[in-house]
Length: 386
Image (cartoon, rainbow, N blue to C red):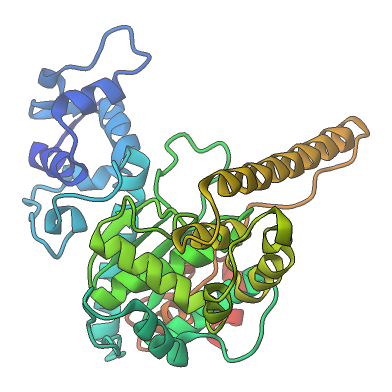
């Protein structure tokens, strides 16, 4: 079966995803005895099977390629048309995720305008010349949860809810263990007000730090797609923007404890490397112990050799924990015990939900579209429209 398609739409996607034609041909020819060629694409009609292989790369739906209209290469359409370079060398999985949420951002923005729902920015734009400590404490007044929350996921959810109150929309994306094209990023900011995070089910501290780091990008209004190194609260290998965002995230999360850390004497074997205090501050601030020790290293309050020793110990303890969890799972499997748990669900920003609620009530979207965007079953709908 052959279909009449619009080759300019494939060219548009190659430009959007920053792939060459040869890159695409190599991907869609994988495992084929007779590789797909340029001539197979640049014809009036294309095999449906070939088009399906192409869409497995881009996830646009077959109708996209059949549309005769010319796609527009505008800066509003994608961050990939707005910015040339990123801090990470993005793989195809990362580009798919970014494109998915860029389209969602555009869709939500359109819905807000159609329903007169205010999504305007509520914070001024800061500069890397502004002191990140001062900015962090200023922003904490508005965005840090008012009540003390110990659970890491609960704290993350409270932050997302707080951000929503200030018109900052946060999305999570979740990748299952068997996904083929895993994204090599853990967060990004899309102007004007969208932050996207990779769910870190086994390391919520990492996700929390990434969220606040991307909040820094929002405050600077500097778009970025990246693998945030939450352990490296250091100036050594970062540009001015990344260093500012890391500094901001550290001070936002550590709060008044920064004074206590700053006043510590040098960590060594004679004071047990301040283990008890660092553990306590980690629990209170949701910063990892490794991130705090990295801060001590940056402040010259621990030697490189002692830091590397502690870092190795923390890494080993984590590996042993994972190994023990896997051992228990295997044992339960041999005993015929069913494995519990399901694929985690992303935390929905109240701002996203409220935008969809208004669109539904105003008749801009129907119930099917409402459920599809929230990825819920129709019977769950009442929970979101009360």
